[in-house]
Length: 171
Image (cartoon, rainbow, N blue to C red; front, side, top):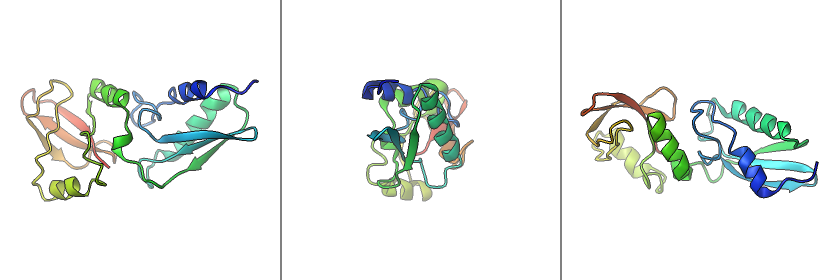
């Protein structure tokens, strides 16, 4: 097989779904940082959403399998923990896919300071962060629980349409 172009590799990586939220890819989430060729080995750098993410091994296997299925014979994954992943790395396309799927995407810019100010405000219950309902678009929402269906999500409810939804928490 000839060496695939960088564009082709990015397209293949963008086909690998996140196992917890399959509507978004590992590229949409920004966890695939980059890749390079080391002789004939394709080395893919992956930053997990957090160091204890239970889906990391599944994601690694999915990336390797998908690339091998596309004809890349030798794949190696590198875990890149620095800088740590942030929700600021979620692409606009990924945010749109989350919203369409019924999950409120992370609020833009709330993780750029490491999330410390927003996190402190949320923990004290004094956050004025507006989380829009992904179903009706209303900002009249309330947090039900800091803990959602996966560790990266919180449970919210819209006070207008009364529907519950997940919010992809900022990191």
